[in-house]
Length: 549
Image (cartoon, rainbow, N blue to C red; front, side):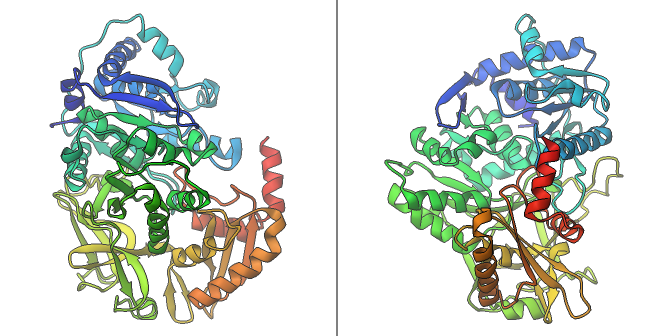
């Protein structure tokens, strides 16, 4: 396909269906893709009547719905670019408003479409034109379908803001050329055509690159049956993911590491009559992958028919549109066993007993290399260095910046190494702790802390406090207040035993108390800042919650 818009338009008479589920995994809405496309063309007419056309930039703020998907299509059919934003955020209304207004000011949008979860008044100070999704859908019902605008590959398709795990979110200007190159590469990597048109399922937010591109733009462009669930519904009842996989005979789905940890606990508690035998691809991406936890998930899901070979680790970033590497399909999780001491002290991946997940080879037409952090020189296989990528889906710059020369390498900010042509990610460059002569990756500590009974899945963050003798380690966990004393002892003991470092302090905060991005990634630098400021305590968080009410 030349662009996603061409594919959507050419699939206008397809047979696939878009289905929306609630937290009970029951169907609450749905339309065949041709009807979604017709609704989008009518919405495009309404947008054109408001003066929008090729080159416009439109914001979408709302939870997953059929109308939101149609509105996304409508913006593309009008010739515009889409900036999807979360309808809520951690930290309460004031933090959300700060984030929203910062993005709106940077994006300079021509129009913002909001759903019922957000009032137009929330964004009126930053943009001149706001319309509710309900009004857009209502007016579209009385409008004639517009003729789709066919964009060029160089035209802007998405203004995708990064998750902000290491810095203030910045816009990544994804063109139609970037988007179609990555979608086609993903399809080849997962052998999508072999399963087409089997149903896909996702609860991932559409304002995050994995949810938007892998689990909406890709199936929408080929007319696959797609079952979506709003992330709020998943949060209300996480087990509905498993129910949906079983009930709708889903063949492909995916999620970040913390979600698999949560599913493991639910499956161990009892999965009832689940049948997961139809699943042929479960992608794990979006955050560091815990090898041991994925093994536990596979073991817990096996009695319900899940073949462990369907687990598919992947690595990507918004600056590369989405996918950079994907593991071979039907191989399962392949680990590289390395000596942790040598890895941390010498930066070499020598044989040992610490498992690191191989996240596969580069996707089609994409190249990955590892260079020395100081010199920029290429390093040999199994030597840790800075991971860099380039290819037709690598954007290479942020919104407002000058586009780099074609073929430039993009530093990802991640550390890793290559082995047999496959990539292994060790951690974020900026998050590494230096202690006792070792470069310690915080996710190794977080994995250990999260395994202690009572710690919320995905609810552990580790960071260092600078000290002339080496970084002092702090671990913060989300848990129930009544378990605080026990958890401090057990987390400190587990980290010392497994990692060989004694935390200076273990902070226990309420559920939702750790700073995370809108897509759920830990914000370690922000956690450190709040800790130093005295804001990462049970009392401080409760006070902030009361002020935000």
